Image 1 (cartoon, rainbow, N blue to C red):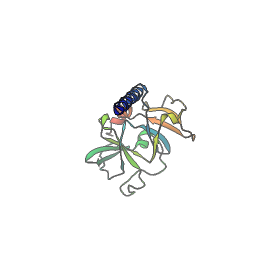
Image 2 (image 1 turned 90 degrees about the horizontal axis):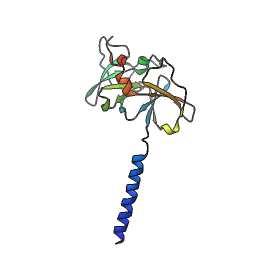
Image 3 (image 1 turned 135 degrees about the horizontal axis):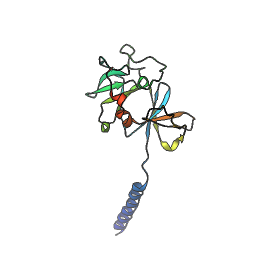
Image 4 (image 1 turned 180 degrees about the vertical axis):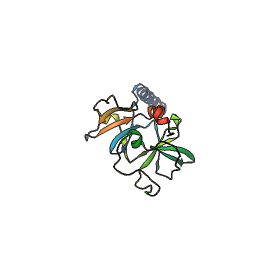
Length: 179
């Protein structure tokens, strides 16, 4: 008899917790990366797998920011030099076959839900960030691309920019890789 009471009590507690979880607003977490000395936050639900820099096949007559294609887990992905696409000055030289993968950064693939096989070159991975740990910073200027969200500042005073990967993959300039 005591087991039935304990089971009912457990079921009530679980039902209460599930209901509270449904009513709570979903939290959005970010993957923090550094690109050309700037902090960017990639929404976890839009970012995919992270890869070491790998051999690239150049694509003739493509934009300078389109580095080529890479075989990532058996699928071809276009590789985009995001600082070059955004017009950011990079403190280190662009990746080349001779430079090697170790100091070249990482590739962050887009989530498969975005239906675009693209990987972005990032200089450094800086872990996960929670929006609750950030405060709003400056509002974007009118010339800021639509896929870069509001600036936020962490508890150490570092500025971060949310990069909406879904909006980036829909951007006409991003989709036009031919020169």
